[in-house]
Image 1 (cartoon, rainbow, N blue to C red):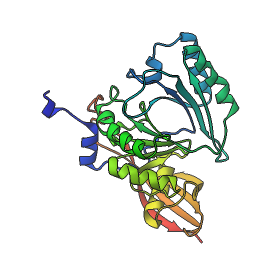
Image 2: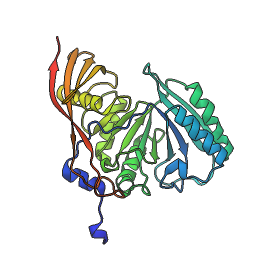
Image 3: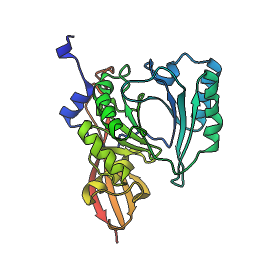
Image 4: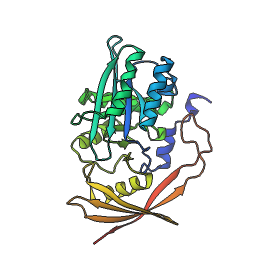
Length: 299
């Protein structure tokens, strides 16, 4: 295959108009480990670290259901100085917790285990992650790095490039943690607007893939409400109940003013034809899309 014939999954997804809603993977905890160079295809699990330390971090992250991501600052990177690690959590009560540290040697990463158990500190600004894991998927690098540089120019202390977050075809992907909000299908200009609005607690449906503490159909329902009634804060809409039926789900959402107090959203799943979903993936994968068929105001 020549360069001109090369397949790019993000180009294909945009030409098909693949829907973003309901595509954020579930998660309420993240482990971030700064690694300035040499991200393997498998991210953290491919690093040449002390096997005992790697096993400790992997085990405690799995027990906490935390996703491990490698991070680095966009643009040029200093070759000296300590690396950062962080544990971030969006707990069941909605608290946003963070714990940060530094590491010079593999053994220093053992600090992550007690940090995962302790929880973390509230009140810190969010972390803005831009997937730029080029070895995993070319689109993440080609589309992600310009977005990381554009955002870093405005919020240098908040923005990091990161390893694979899922949904390569929606590159560039931006994830705000520990808020647990996924955005996709961006470019440099749109990413600045999206992050600016997010930091002002005004989340719009445009480019929103979903909230990671919700299931895919619940994500699709909330995004449909945002699309219908306009932007809202991260916690202005909450899922009150989800009922499965033969055609999909009936999801009740309660909202803060000025939005309707209670809504019922019907969501149905649809399987796509087999297609290539990632740059490196096979050509016979099918995805589930979540379509909102009705929104009804409850009295």
